[in-house]
Image 1 (cartoon, rainbow, N blue to C red):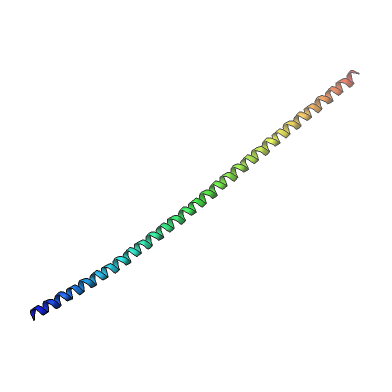
Image 2 (cartoon, rainbow, N blue to C red):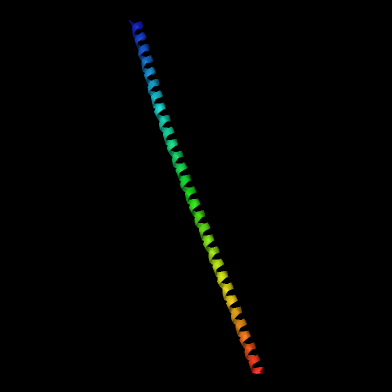
Length: 109
C-alpha cells in the first residue's frame, strides 16, 4: 500500500511539474511576445520621429534657401536701381554740361 502511495505521489508530482513547466513556457512566450511588440512599437515610433525630424530639416532648409534667394533678388534690384540712378545723374550732368556749352557759344557769338 505504501508503494502504491509512492507511485501515485510520484506520478502526481510529475503531473504537477509538467503543468508548471507548461505554464512557465506559456508565460515566457507571452512575456517575449509582449517585449517584442513593445520593441517593434518603440522602433516604429523612432522611425516616425526620424521621418518628422527629416521633414522639418528639409522644410527649414527650403525656408533658408527661399530667404537667400529673396535676399539675392533684393540685392540685385537695389544694385540695378543704384545703377539706374547713377546713369540718370550722369545723363543729367551731361545735359547740364551741353546746355552750359550751348549757352557759352551763344554768349560768345
